[in-house]
Each structure stands twice: as C-alpha cells, then as structure tokens.
Length: 345
Image (tube, rainbow, N blue to C red; front, side):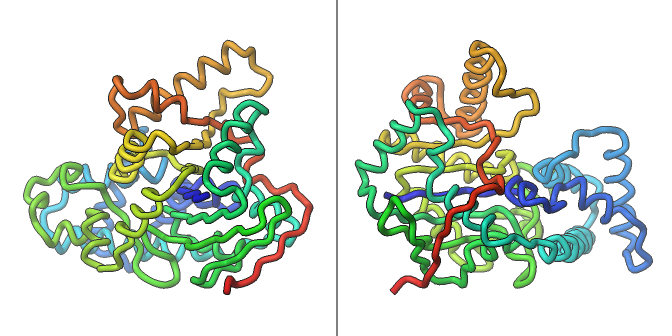
C-alpha cells in the first residue's frame, strides 16, 4: 500500500507556529536601513495593497501578487534584488519559528499515527471504503512519502528523519516505511528557498515572460529544473505510484497549479486511486444539520475538481473517490500510545 502526502502551511500552523503569510508580513514590512531602493519601493506597493484589502491573505496570494507586481519592475536586476530580499527575510523569519517547535513524545506519537491511519477520522462507511483500498494493495506493508510545500523541517523533527528510509513499528500494520520527505521549494537552513509563480503566464511584465534570467528568479518549476535536483520527477513518481493521496494544510493556489493538475491527471487515469482532502472551513460545524453538511461536501468536491482540472464529463467517477475531511482532530496533538522508530535495514 502506497500513500503520498502533500503537506502545506496549515500543518505548521496546526503545530502552533506563526507561519501564516500575515505573520511574516508584520515582520517583513518594517523599515530596514539596509534595504535597497528597489526593495523600499516594493514594500511600499505591498503595504498599500495590503492596507487597501487587495486580497493578499495567504502565501498563494503573495506569490500571485508578486507576478502581477512585475509590471512595476523595470529590470531583471531590480527583480532579483526584490526576490532575494524577500527570500532572505523569509528564511530568517521561518528559522525563528522552526526553533520554537518543541513537541513531547506523546504528541509525536499522535502525529505519526495520524499519518499511518488517516482513515480513522471518517465515519464507519467511508472508513471501510478506505480500508478496502488498503486490503487491495497489501495492507501489511505500508509505504508513504511526504511532499511538503513548507520550508521548515518540522516533519523531520517529528519523525527524527535523516534522509534515510524509516521503519515505523505500528500495532495494526506489520511494516510501515516512511520512504522520503521531499521539500518541493527548498529548506530554510540548507539552501535558497523558492518563491514565485507557476509559469510565465502569471508574470504581468511582458518583457520578463520569455527572458531566461527572469524565469531563473520567479518561475518555480523552471528554478527546480535549473537547480538540477530532479525533485519534480521524483515527486511525480510518488504520486504516480500512490494508491491513496492525502492533501493537508494546502490552499491549492494557482502559483502551484502544475501539482494540482498532475493530481487530476492521476485521478482520471487510474480509477483505483483514492484521495483524502482535508479542509479548513470556519462555517463548518459537526452539529450542523445533515442537509448543510451534504451541501458543503458537494460544493467542496466541485471546487476541488475545478482545481484539479477535471472536466465535468469525468467528475462523477472521480468524486466517488474523493473523501473530504473538515479538519477537527487530524494532526491535533492529543494521543498517547507508543511508537518506535528505527532505521530500516
């Protein structure tokens, strides 16, 4: 049984870290005597649009706004100065947040068990359907990979992961392996992180759209390819081989559209693949009337299919394999039983 997790900033927020874009913005926007003229003007534009409610609330919004703001940037050097400053300041800010992480053993146990058994948060009927997928694909051997869009190493700290396959001893599944944790956009304390857009169409400055130097600075897939880390190919492989795909803490923004479209292609091409999508919605309540719950679930599946690029003609069969969980207990810290982690042979 192969599971792939795609993890976003909601995971770190769930651990109590102040890693929302709005948290960083409060620190970043402060005046700094070391800032270049390009950065000072950039911050002025960002502050103006933030104060005038231009919809910059999440990381995805900042990245799309950055692509749009290129219309105000006249040269590649100016673009580089701005993005480098943003990159450097974000690394420093996130490092301070990462250093605050302090999770005791009981909480680590709970988090790891959530990764191994995401099905436990569903009702009996849906849990049985997901467990049926486990049985069809060797329920005694579970391999999972984690693709994280976060720059922090919170997952490494939880799993004590050191870039090697881990065998996790679980009561109900004899062999559980965490194969890889992949940081799609880099890691705070190891390299420059990647901030930007999905493709050149999201860059408003027409002179930048086909300029390789601009793409080196701002287009995320292009940057990964130039780095030569083959992380896109590896992660595509994890998705391609997955029997169950789990999305947590993600806003499914257009600045990472390539990943959502790839997920859609997999769901359309392999009718045996299931997907769990964990959603935050302040309007959702477990006490709501069933009609309201069903309506919200339908609307959520409709929106997810749209993000995944699934045409209406195929949405019926795909929706049968989508499991929506309104985040209440998943990756909440409260469980007590022991788990042992050892390096795999």
